[in-house]
Length: 213
Image (cartoon, rainbow, N blue to C red):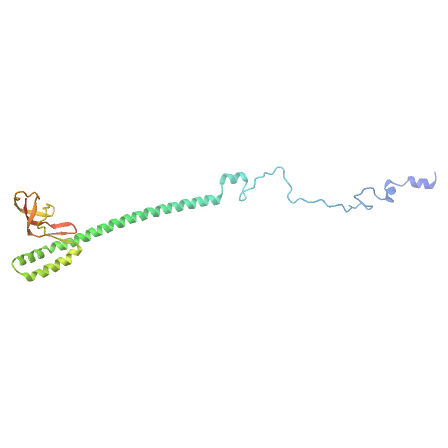
């Protein structure tokens, strides 16, 4: 066997392929990667075991469903407190309004009774004026008239019921006379022996009268 043949037999497979281009389209002669398009990277790879439900406020779905929405729960608590305060305010307002009405009514009654007591103390002055007039002291008439004009606008009422029907609540009958024939008018005051007085509808002293019928 010649030297040339021996030389060809002694070459390794790598030496044989060294002089020829590579048949792999993805590698060049030096064995480097060719300019093939790079594989696209997926930012969020799909996890087949993951759930489609989204956590709430960083809590797992199961725990979030158990606690509920904290914002709605807080709003419900605040609304309940608001309704409670409003109910208390309405109740206190109604109680205060009732108290004010009662206080005003009591004040009016007390002040009216106090003025009535003062007018009752002046009855002796009226009686003295009436007695002086009966004895001809006409100069006393303006004094009595001035007192009546000053007190009537604030509640005084003079009971002088001549020719009026007899009222036992306002009149004190001390004398009686029978009615005339055919007189069916009932009991009528025919004479006032002493005037009576009332204050804001309350009789301070009934009129002393003579009644017919």
